[in-house]
Picture 1 (cartoon, rainbow over the protein chains, first blue to last red):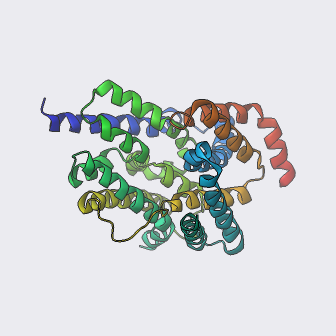
Picture 2: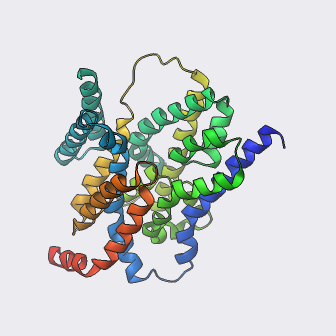
Picture 3: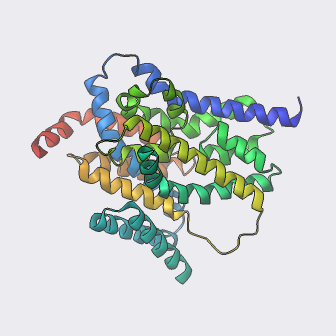
Length: 108
Length: 228
């Protein structure tokens, strides 16, 4: 098989597996019947947990390396959260937090 | 078109994050000998950032390895659809695309703000999914095209992604009647990171979270009722 065709096949396999993973809950629970109370409970409470996990995911390398890599990110997160509690505007919070972070890593 | 404009505004932070990460991806593909068309192709058929970065080194590898890697890197997404089953139901056939395009970032946007009164929720869902993937494909192409020469130092712009998750966390935190799931998520993520390391910590953490949420269901629902 030519390398081009092989790489194409690799992408199709990766894309296919990813699609199946994303579609599985809909295939298992989406066939007309009501979602069970247990599942409804998970669907309601899981996102808050998952977002917390994704924040840790963003910080994973800094957490494992050093505090000097971690603290600008923690301050960025704090600024973002405070701006959001204050203004409730996604762009202000995200731009504010990101700019503060970019300044902090340059001052180090 | 009001749905399109609303989706455009909501997805702007993802635009910033995806452009930066997409460019980084395009640059890495370029360095590995795959041009911008390959980056675009990968972003079109796979559309899963962390997996796409992993795949760069595997494009000449064997198919079974790729299947197993895809499964373990993206397993966390098994849980995303659960909270969207009811919301995706009105999408009918276009649901296929919305499921395909359910990335971390699109999922978090869908978990964030409620669609305002008067707008069609299914159009908003579709526009957000389509826009997010377009940003990602565009970023990958630009990265591939511009090679290594960045006009100025943009180090740290990718923090926009962390900030986006923070904003969604604050919104979810304020809307939730019980905050326990936040601490459960945080606790298991940190524990799992220390035990399993950065490459493999997501799946064990998510499994532990789902089990713990089920175990604590009575406690959490009691709190929710008291908060009403």
